[in-house]
Length: 116
Image (cartoon, rainbow, N blue to C red):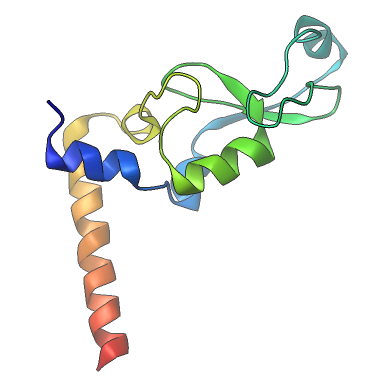
């Protein structure tokens, strides 16, 4: 059964900093040939030469950079296999929890300052 922290992390999108940690590839002619019959599963458009794609760390699935970045801002899971991308980019679960706690503490302080 999923614990509350796992569910909160899963339902929460990623920050731009976290998304930028995922690798990108600018397709050249050879790579385009390898992906000739493939398409982005978000928009269903094919991959083409000079296009920038992003490969997800946890699972290796690839998408158009713009498509997956917009997706990850809303949800931190791969749209294909649901692997958690926040877990994939951090060295270990403990590091992720510590960073999430610090981020939430910062947001709480900032929100309190704005409300006062």
